[in-house]
Length: 119
Image 1 (cartoon, rainbow, N blue to C red):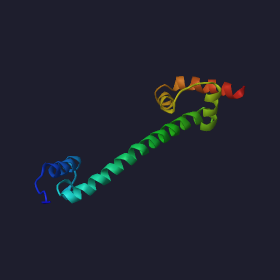
Image 2: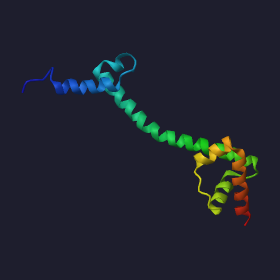
Image 3: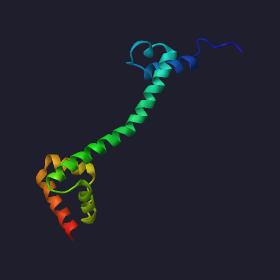
Image 4: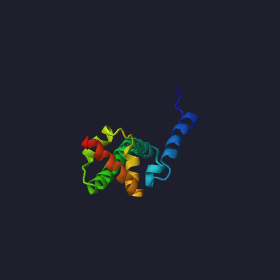
């Protein structure tokens, strides 16, 4: 069977990699072999970092909530325990935004949590 040098399947496959590696530096954008490796690595990092991004943001929200709650005289873990006892269903993003943007509303939640913990 003859070797296909300029077939459409071959050029389509190569074009796919050049589209993925558009904007890369040096040979990684133009040389097929290097572009293929660079694209595989980039896609791997992208998948990994989408997962890491979720962890990083949750860690940030917890840190912000913890700082705001400590100013009210509680620890983060006791605060979360009190939220569950008081049956207040707010996620960490909402709590973090409340602590930053509306400290008065966050303070009222903390007082409800303290009352729930006391009973």
